Image (cartoon, rainbow, N blue to C red; front, side, top):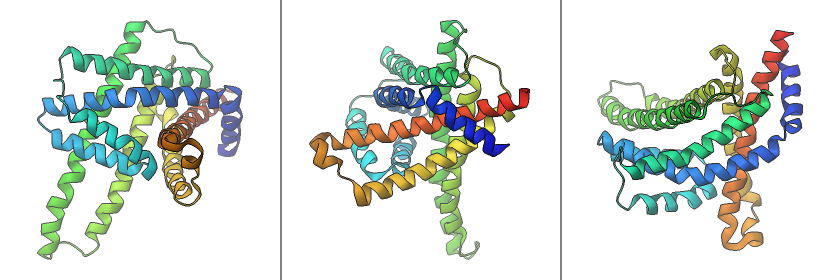
Amino acid sequence: MILSDLNAALRNLFRHNGSELAGYIAYTALVSLFPFTIFLFAVAGFFREELLAQNLLSRIMSALPAQVADTLLPIARDILSGKQPTLLTVGALGTLWATFTGVEALRLALNRAYETHATRPIWKRYAEDAFIVIAAAVTGLLASALIVAAPLILQPLQQHGMLLPGAIRGLNLGRYLLTYFLLTLFLSAAYKLLPALRQRWRRVLPGALLASAVWLLLATLFSLYLAYFNRYNLTYGSLGGVVITLLFMQLSAMIFIFGAEFNAAGSRAANR
């Protein structure tokens, strides 16, 4: 059952032009990434938690391959060093709208996977886009708060002998598990809300779990590849970092689409 769904998902990934759609998603993701970062800091400013937003940005970048993070992080910091818009200003709303482009690219790929078409009115689609963007920002800030607060609480307890010696190592493992959980949560929400059809959570969870695991594996392998076999700077010169970033985003988008195709294959098999 699972093997047949995986096989069907892989076939449909290319039958539905998943590679081409992944390239489109990678482009829109790069375009909308920095507006989303600005909006994230606007949300953090609303809650007076700018330091949490900075920590979240660093955590996100640390999960990426080093050369991808080295390309994106300086740009993000340069943008955020200027005056930030407050949450309800025209500037913040404009950056929020810019991120809708990336969400709509994901919606297009999901509709292709489920072989359906967008039927919802545009206002409803934008409302869903806004919900996903805001939820991603708030969830990220909450996760960052947990990550920052946990060591501050556990380290004094360990120093006073109130914790087992391996507690801090367990915390580090917990951070990886938290990354996996949040990624699965985000993908599940995207798989459920974006396509133009109704789905239950249990139908979207398998693809989200699969895509999250494959993405973490991709990030690890891509880092090793760049460390030992990278020749992009020789080919593209100063644009090497940008090319590597786009390539990583395209591979990530293909994993996102593959997870949706896996869910779609499972739904078709269940309806037979």
